[in-house]
Length: 169
Image (cartoon, rainbow, N blue to C red; front, side, top):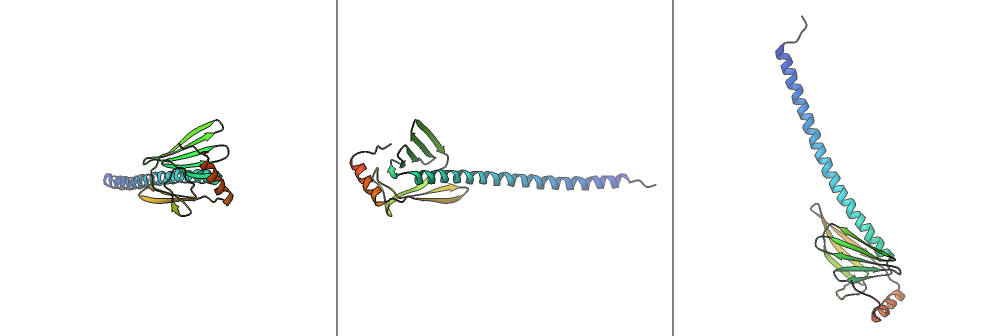
């Protein structure tokens, strides 16, 4: 006779069950790690998108200046205001029949606005550098932005500001 005994079948089933539970536990752990990685990656992608939008707004702006608790990017046809709140960053675009607010849900801390390396504290002061920190997944990222002006632009700004051509949010 070539049959298996009941004990041999029970041992084989027990070993198979143990192997199946190990494989299941490993796959479950791998799945959890993949979800954590995807969430962290999505968050970094979100921060990267915000960085790109702000960099583009600063690059396209004719002037960047301190405005309340944030900055304004002034172009010929529109204004874009950034409000840095402890819980979020608000972007408000105005001009050409457009008022479209965007809210970025992360805290920007240690906001520094400067002109020629000197901190700007006065409202509606021209700015050529913006820096702040963002906390993400127990890590801190520093965002730095620069704006370059021609001498003629700076002179026009002084005249524009003196004549009251800038409104503050």
